[in-house]
Structures are given as C-alpha cells and as structure tokens.
Length: 305
Image 1: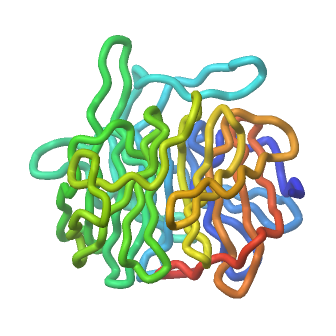
Image 2 (image 1 turned 90 degrees about the vertical axis):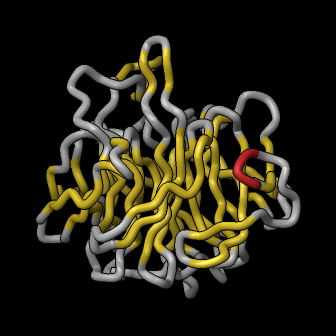
C-alpha cells in the first residue's frame, strides 16, 4: 500500500470518483472531504455530528449516514471513538452535493429516532440499505437495525431488528444477497434479497431475523465497514487486527491484508470499479488514506460519480 495523505480526522466511507480523487467523511471533523491523487485535501461540506458511511445515489449526490457524534479519545497515540457525547445531535441520513449543499432527508422511522446510522449501499432500483449501529452510554447501549429507504426522502422501512452493533453493509455483485457485519460479535451475516427492501432467509438460517452466518471471527476481532469485490468476496475492515479481511462467498477466510503501519482502527475499503484493481483503505486511528493494487478487480456499484 502507498500512503496518499495523512492528518485526516478519523476518515471513513471512501468513494472512488472517476477523476481519480476519493470522497470520504472525516467523522471527528464532521465533514465530507475530497482527497486528490497528489494528497491535497479539500472540504466539500460541513455536516456536523458524526458523518460515517457514504455512497453515491442515482442523482449523483453523496448520501451520508450521520451517527450524530461521538466522544473522542487518544489511546496510545491512536484516535479512538467512544460513547454518545454531550453534544449529540441525533442520527440522520444526509444528501450532499459536491458543491456543498446539505439536506437532512431522514431522522426517524415510524416515530422512532435514528440513533447511529453507520454504513450504506444502494441497489440498482435506486433505493438504499443502511445500518444503524446505535449509541453507547455509560451503562446502556441501543439495539441496532437495518433499514431500507428511497433516495427522494419519500419512504423508509425497518427491515431487521434487533441486531448487535450492525456496521458494514454490502450487496453481492448480482444484488441477490445482502451482507451485514456486526462489530462486537465479530460476525458477518447474510440474507437473500427478495426485492427492494425485502429479505428472506438464505441457505443456512441460524441467527436472529433469519440470518445465515457467513463467517464468525476467532479471538477478539471487531468488525467495521465492508465492500464486495468483483469476485463476490466480502472485504471487511477488521478492528484491533488492523487489516482488511477477505471472505469468500462460501465463508472461508482467504486472507487478511494489513496496513503498512499498524493501526487497530482500519475501518473501510473501496474499489475503483470492475475494470480496475485499485483499492483505497482508511486507516482511521492514524488519520491516513492508502491506495493499493488489489489482488482481484473491484466491482461497479449501482451508481457512480
């Protein structure tokens, strides 16, 4: 891997753009930020709270999961997120244009406030799936959920509840399978997609909500965001281990790819597309963005920019 830039404030949610730049969020800074190939950094928009996962929608705008903010700590020289802060602003889904216009499109579902929206993926129908990890406090933690919503702000539905810290979310290359990673349990689950916003149990339902287990990580390994490559492998950021773990569609752990300088907060990966082996990885505890040639081609997401 080659370092593209450093000094970012807990980067997450990278999106590869066609001009070679990468749009990502800086959770601690509260911004949508653009990183150019030469390492230059420009703020696209001030989002406030805690912008987390991001994806391009059918209208070319960036849709951001905003978790409402986090406490921040220095842990042995690494920036680390913590519990719900005193200035928590509430969870929301935001639509952001690359000229900096920001609109909150969802803040609740059937009267229940969003708590900590985390990661997002669009399907080819133009709707999006997203996780809500919840917020932690001194003596309690919200249960998490997975939602499906329309990009125009017209509808949002709770599809899976409860879950334990649902974080990364992604779709198989043909859109027939939905993957969700739970942070604390260290498990990646999957379901068959029956239609927009509709799931059914897949081949080995063993978990809550008819979930099938793709892989349960051994030891103390926590999971963050994920992306699916062109071969259908689930590439999930693995906390503490400080690597991207590659899971085959049958659940086999193929390999773990670490960042050059050890960082327990490796949080995300994104690909340039189906015609490229270029991948970007966020090393958030050290505030860095890396680029690398991946061992397989990437995947074209439903919408690009």
